[in-house]
Length: 300
Image 1 (cartoon, one colour):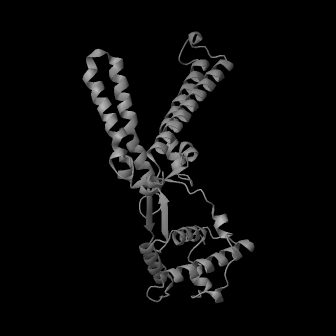
Image 2 (cartoon, helix red, strand yellow; image 1 turned 60 degrees about the vertical axis):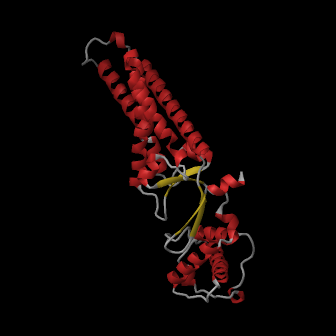
Image 3 (cartoon, helix red, strand yellow; image 1 turned 90 degrees about the vertical axis):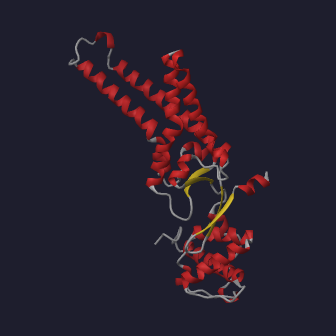
């Protein structure tokens, strides 16, 4: 289990020098999330259809009793049909977009399985990336399914077309098994990947132990130098220090020193980072006590 987890571990270094370690979502978790979302979409479609049928019955609309297309009942039925078409379109096309564009970057299925969509590299997840990966899902999943279903419905003369659709479907379904990051074609095109959501909350990291006084540290930083980062960066810096990865420590120390304009002695990167971490944590804890919160480097 631990060997498999290590193969999914990744770390990226932001331009500001913060190491962002994370774990890629497993293929099983991604498949389970998709099946959960499809089940919820199907349930929502059925519930919407039954609700509209109930509304039609409640206002006395009977298709057999409609005499002309211009009658009030006919117009009411047309309105319900339009509502149904719009609802089916939204459930089918907007479900993934709506939830993945939200602050959590995850559909209900992904939230249940503890995963989310993230941008590859150090950039933030963009609207364009989410739209791109979901447009490609139509080519990967829904179009071949429609193609296969249409081929079977047409009769036995379309065996070749149904097999072509099945091969098309299999290629895209098996694509994540042929790259080390378990990427869909949509992820490759959109520049995204799916990662596990960290289980630990930042509040726990902020209260691990009492903060150490700045005077006891090898380096002393001004409030302005500490203000460039927030709680999110504090948590990631703590994880990096806990893991103790040598090359990552060098890169992060160099980037932070350039960001704040503070050099450090050769081979003192860990002491530099530990001092910065402890003093940043103390400053953030003081801000929390005073009702001020800095969530990350982007917060004012």
